[in-house]
Image 1 (cartoon, one colour):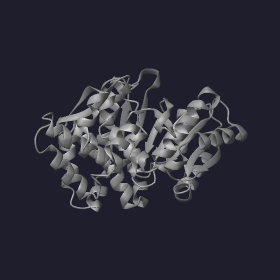
Image 2: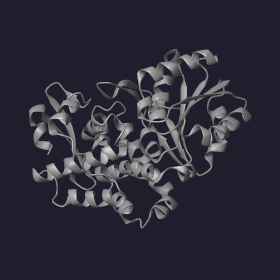
Image 3: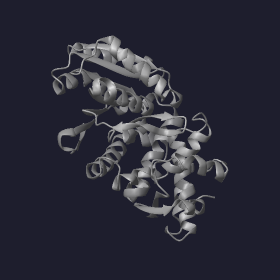
Length: 354
């Protein structure tokens, strides 16, 4: 087992990474939260049939009365209506402030379930049990919880740290290839902004099977990078913005297609390549960087273009959380492994799009 500590004072917690850890989560939860008498599991229609029974069994064996709340799978469920339904179900279940909510699923479940935990009774304990690669290496760590609004992605939310993150990499065995690659886009992002060796390691795998055989080390590397950044900037006001490399454009692409065409990781892949191509042309990024990123993204069948008109992207990006007044902070690469923040005026933004 690999354990990574996220040192956030009274909000500190551990990330535990181990194959088969799912079956011991009940014991770990009871030890971590001895006052809890009840556990609510938020999952979705893809994951609940596969893994919820095992988690329920583990929790109930440790003396926790358990209720399962299942939402429809997909980004379309990450909204205020579904959040409200989950909160109502928590209230009806008899949950109290000393009880715990566990999120069993990918990024949508973690984001929505975490926001429900932050909101219910002004905050109850929650534990992340991420089942997708994207959630295991990125969205489950760091305490960002949110839902989407019609105006844009993740525009309603808060910062609310979990009590623990339990990552069972065995669960990736049932992940469709598209979603394995979707998560890998975020791993490639970490390599781009902070760890060129990680980028080259991902580039070197001969097959998905070889990647999966070594996935624990990739997950641990990504979680470690994110933990160290979050420790320095919990509330996303400076250094943590680096983690948004590719996301400003990526979110706009996702929203343009109604979250039904490109996955989150695919949007990020498009954003990373398209922005780096422009910053390279503007002399801000080492020559050849964009081509190298494109090569690795395409190796894992990730898209590098979306065909969305510049005007449509700008309209959506104008609502991005990194925009402040008449300026926006972009995350760009000086070279592979060297991400930096660059604040520009909104009027300059069209220069960074094709």
